[in-house]
Image (cartoon, rainbow, N blue to C red; front, side, top):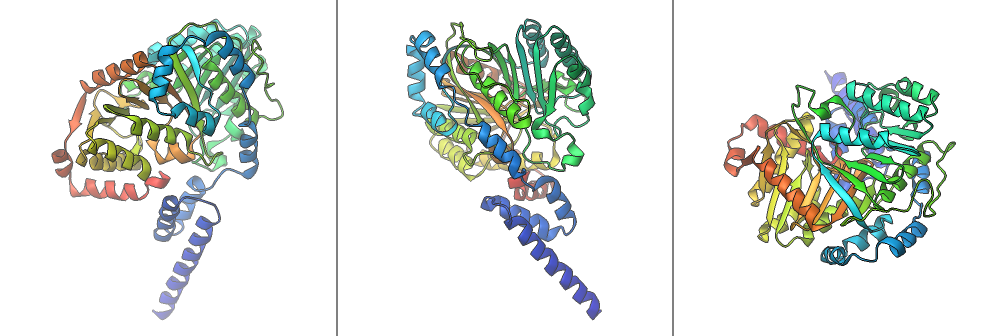
Length: 485
């Protein structure tokens, strides 16, 4: 038996040393470091396989290319637009002023320019979204830029592809970016005919296969459509049948997306160009930012919404969208209403929510009633239970799967985008959100939230306390892994 003990001690020692070397060889925050040590220590071999998929960072060459592309400047476009179109926005100025420096923070952190006089429409139904998107794509004369985390080769995916092929055959510039992991099952050859017709399609950062890429983290979670530099779409929907409620597993898919017309489109156009040029540096898009250029035409929209398009990702140490969420929460005087499919906040966001609730602010958070990822959902339940103890109203959306990522504060300020209220969106994924300075838009978000409440169940502390010990154990265990989920 002595030799068995010796072998076990050697294996444990080697595993411990390998875990320490593996985790500390790359810079991480303390929470993620401890989470990975926990996995590698207590799951020998299996833990290292999991790390190979979910723990490794992007190659330095790809990070360098992304950082290089983020230096894009839009100052000449902004100056021209400000001079010609943004002179009369008194009401918008008041709302921006109420945001207590939020616009300035985004300018400093992400060079996100503040755009006025946009026309914004909120879309919450997949059928309506694709109907309007198809109409805008049909009208395209110059270019169509599409970037999605998920572009499935299913019914709606083929419909989108065939429309893009039609426009490419007409001579319209068509470019598509997709994430290989989020679009698992969609092969590169799916876009071959589009390429034959003169279109362009590449997986984000050249990761052609979700299997050979061998990396779960650092995904392109953005959702962007830009048509002729004049109209853009962004939010939570992807391209797939499930987003139209065609999958029995999820039922009705409840999401939130924006259709933007005006100079706010520039932010999404610039973000797409950065991602495209980092993905395909051999065939870059010419960065022409002169007003009136093909990619940045002078906006002629007379809308009422001021907004900023804000991006974040692992190519930057500044968690810009998370800072935006924090700024929204701390700016609240009356109410904070949040919808998110994944509620796994870090300590800074958790403390901000607790401070708001204890200060008497009406804090409400709506989450799905069903999981799409088991560990993530159990961790979400754990944090929901903690929030409920502080007086935060937690609602489970019962009419399908809630995938919307929205925040609305005091009926004045709002955010709609791709970023969830979780570690992954803050630190690991490439995300994009639109922060909105418009009372009418914010009040519309509140109305949507109220309508969803009628299809939801308020979760009480008593309901959480009556959960089984096994369910609570799964929640606690999942919470330990929250920094890497």
